[in-house]
Length: 112
Image 1 (cartoon, rainbow, N blue to C red):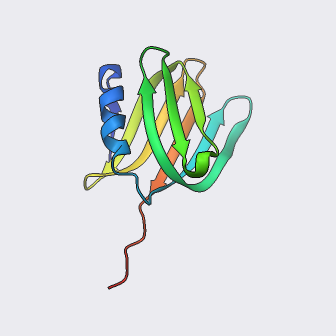
Image 2: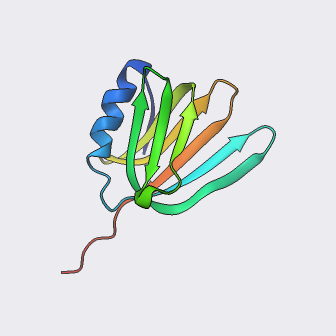
């Protein structure tokens, strides 16, 4: 597994491309902060999209069925963990040091 830091100039294009392949992918969002420790914000739920808006400097995690949409204001760093061309995790760090870790698991293989 390889973890890499994305340059801010890549964020919008990278996550637009990733979002095209999220059908059937589930995500779990954890928030890690000095004050609160490590908390699961969203249990495993199907993902709708991941996007970065450079104009407003907001990273958005969209979960299916319109629930749990999560906006991360003013991210300063984004890391992605990939294995064999598959995205396994995204870590977004805000300027105050709070980390948001989105773990992904692919759709189960269809029988037959």
